[in-house]
Length: 87
Image 1 (cartoon, rainbow, N blue to C red):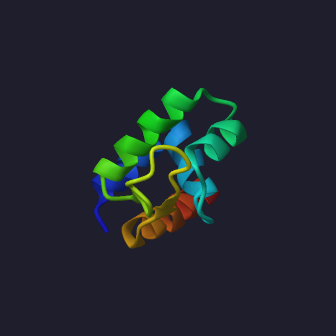
Image 2 (image 1 turned 30 degrees about the vertical axis):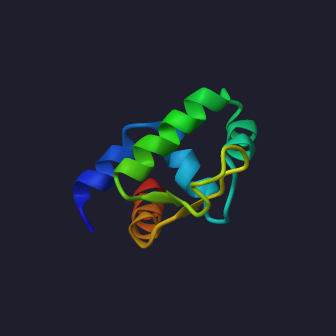
Image 3 (image 1 turned 90 degrees about the vertical axis):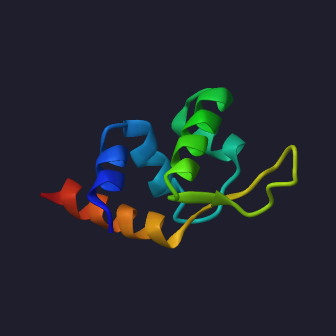
């Protein structure tokens, strides 16, 4: 696991919350509702997380209703961030 990815997530409360919420598959709309954030802002965070290899869209050809999940790397980062938050 790369520490720069953990640091990337820790720098943003939104990114931390998104990876925690993605413990089960979600759409950007579901995430934005849970985060009480705008859909464009949530989509931007998802794009950033995807660029880091922490989340992926399982149906990228869809225009609406895209579904995001954590990658294996994302699951490891979520676990480590959770451990660090407990300290």
